[in-house]
Amino acid sequence: MWDDFAQASCMPDHCFCEAVRDGWLRQPANAVSSLAFCVAALWMALDRRRVPSRGGWRAIEAWCFVVAVFLVGVTSAGYHASLTFVGQFFDVQSMYLVVGVLLAVNVDDLRPGAPRRFLTTYLGLNVMLGVLLVVVPAFRRFGFGLAIAAVVVTEVLLRLRRLRSTPLAPLVLAVALQALAFGIWALDLTKTVCVPGSLAQGHAVWHALGALVTALLWRYAHAR
Image (cartoon, rainbow, N blue to C red; front, side):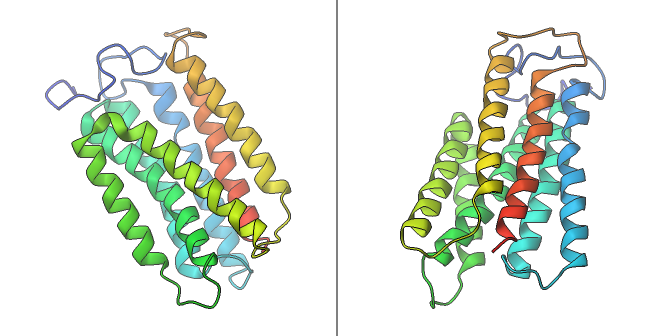
């Protein structure tokens, strides 16, 4: 079905543990589990509509995050269904969109009293990362790690400068779950723990935990 398209960088035998099948769904467990992000995004959208004046992100920032999380679910499902290069691009780009919101908000918050430049920072960051995804596909995971590191650094700076005093519990739990998810992701990627034909896949657990992490980040942001 998908053989006529440019294949993902992981093909033919390094696309996580789950066996690559023929047909529309090459990796059904990994594809379907990706939709956990769509569920998380729906919950965020309902939460925002229920309390639109809640503190935290401005409307544009909040809705960019909701849309980005939803796109992670859709594009990740498409990537694991097809294992094509196009699917890979949109999957990783949507992950950048999520982290980009966190980074752009933090950059603005480090400039108290200055005009908000969220959209300029957000769009510029994602255009740059998108170009790198095409030109240097191998950069995708390193780039995602750098983006997360930048979020952590800016968060620490905000705390040190006393520009943010939000309760840390949701963020600490999010970091702990993300660390657990990354460990499971690594075991799955390296096939250290692997049953290729099973529908119980470590990468599917990574998706579920990742969706929960985005929900915790939403709670953290809106506790301000």
